[in-house]
Image (tube, rainbow, N blue to C red; front, side, top):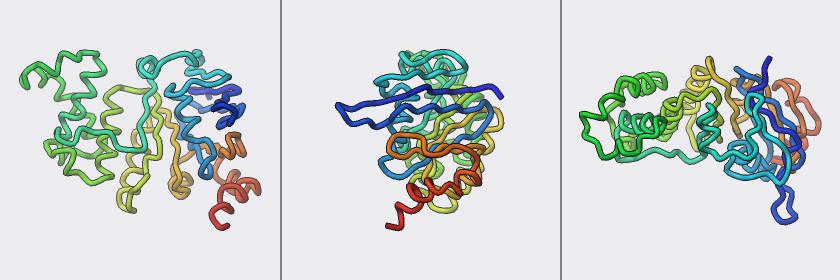
Amino acid sequence: MSIALESRGLTKDFKGFVAVKDVDLKVETGTIHALIGPNGAGKTTFFNLLTKFLQPTRGTILYKGRDITGMAPSGIARLGMARSFQISAVFPDLSVLQNVRVALQRKRGESYDFWRSERDLSQYDDEARARVDEVGLSEFLHSRAAELSYGRKRALEIAATLALEPEMMLLDEPMAGMGREDVERTSALIRRVAKDRTILMVEHNLSVVADLSDRITVLARGEILADGDYETVSKSPEVIEAYIGAGNE
């Protein structure tokens, strides 16, 4: 299979503290790839390096074979790679439809649209409705985002991300803070949107990782500890000691 995203020797040094060390990662096109590890493993730093919110001390990042190491986040978004964050980022006083419409306006780079009339902005409505329907929020189309449950706010965030038409989505702990019902709903949503896209996600919920992931990379102390499918990774003595065993100490 082709490689969507790759890091080679990726390293981040914070004034002598090496948070990420020589990480080589390959995410295959069309797969769901999970990044896991104990607290302090370097997952967030690595994720921020990949999405260009941090610059590496050394190493290379390739997206579809293109070197994006020196690019800004806006640049990689235009190439088709978009990310979500741990904290849901929606406009609470706007409706579900309006939130997705904002993302569509941003994709087109038409910031002056915010000063246009509601009638002028209606040109985006059909596409916005399609994205809302894709994440299962059609019945909440005109509801204020603030009125949604936490899980549905995350679904709205994914809808806004889909409005950017990404070929690859990077999800930062998409299940964080969710109850069982929201976890199940969001897992089903990720599986649906992954049919035509590549997904890389940081996730702590091992049952979600086991259910969704084609491949798993385990980080510990900033380095790759194991890489493979869930069955292979879960049986690794090093992973059991560093990831599972750490929670039993």
